[in-house]
Image (tube, rainbow, N blue to C red):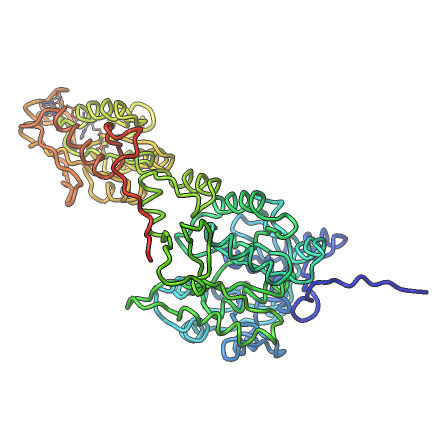
Length: 592
Ligand code: ADP
Ligand code: ADP
């Protein structure tokens, strides 16, 4: 008898086999039923990501959140108790709780209370923030995003055998979310034994496309395009935008026999060199034996003294050093530049001096192209990718803005707001006017003028304004809004870059003389209590973007003043330049 065992052409997972923590389907209902009786803990978004990658074997040979001995040896030597490489601590921090007992089971749930796993509690141990920060990240500086985050973690780690009932639910891009086993099965279908993985948390431009294509040809294999969609660096382009761009690139511009796009639900640590090693180990588990590492891989930016946390090539050096043991070859990301005269990319080292080259920096992409609504050139970014980025980052004149008019009753807020609304419509913007008096007839119906009710009224108006701004509209709000704190809350809710506070600074005597609604007279007679300016305070803004004078200026003058401010900040387009591209210099830097 001949027994055929299928031998995979791919590199084996680190440690030989993929860890699989999923409870078999037959016993799942049983374990689930028992779990409903257990004490629960709720996992952070980060721990949910970690659990998913533990469960599917992406962290093989690690099969649990680390216990004390593993954690200590990882910090000191980048090795597990077994001696196998593992560069970063993967722990489950919690606050101490009397509900937790050693050798008992606990249920692990996500923030929505979905049951994910059962853990047998084998260890509860305190951990030392300073030691972890220093050894794993090389710094205690709070500018390091993970060091800052660790200050909010629980003071104890727990560890123990895991039985995972379900993976965290994802409703987006399901066809691209493959486990290590599924990724391997798909890669085997390509028929190559060499796989080069590319890790990214950024949109891909032509230079990345060139580099990854070259890498696949160089190793004589297939490219695993493996972007992180778990947690990346705060402020990164959101993954919905990025994945739409990756998809259009992968389907439109690569040889389909040479690329596999898979999303990785990893929670990054921004740990530079140690993180590069970790990334390589994770990719080996997905079937890759080559891994591309660029300049400042997984770098968290600069520390509080302005110096980078890690050297630009520390990550390449560290992976190089452990490459043989890890079984993953380090492919350095060589710097490529565009040669406009030859319409191609070339490695810097191969460009003769005196040759004209072109490049656009990340800051230039935002400030000189996306904000003013300039199209990114096709030598820099494929048109499909440029269009997706332009949708997510519309030009300033299509971004939302909130104009908040504050001042005494009768100051002229509503009158000015009406004049401004018409001017903005004339300039092609969509406007919603939220007038305090009007809002109080529906959204805030029933609210009075106690401090509490006024704050509630302002918060409601602010909530609606923030939604409008987020979706690219102009919200003009006109409410007395006498309290500074409430106005500042709205500013933070909307986002200060999109908030224009306008102080309609009309003296009380003038408002009282106008008394269009007869309110001041009533207030003076004591028929209305807590009237702003009479027997209730008005806290004038300290640093409003604009202050209006309604005594010497007409409503039309003041509306034009606000329009001018919006034009200057780019929220309104100068009508004389609409439809032309004149006035914009070509922001490419050419050097030779
Ligand atoms: P608020 O909304 O601040 O309570 P309104 O706009 O409802 O105030 O009332 C302001 C009154 O003052 C209106 O009757 C308006 O015609 C009059 N007014 C006189 N001059 C001005 C000015 N320069 N700007 C705004 N309103 C003015
Ligand atoms: P707030 O910002 O304080 O919630 P609104 O702008 O929503 O105020 O409403 C203020 C309007 O309600 C005033 O223009 C005035 O006509 C009327 N009003 C009635 N009672 C009072 C009061 N006690 N204080 C201020 N305005 C009052």
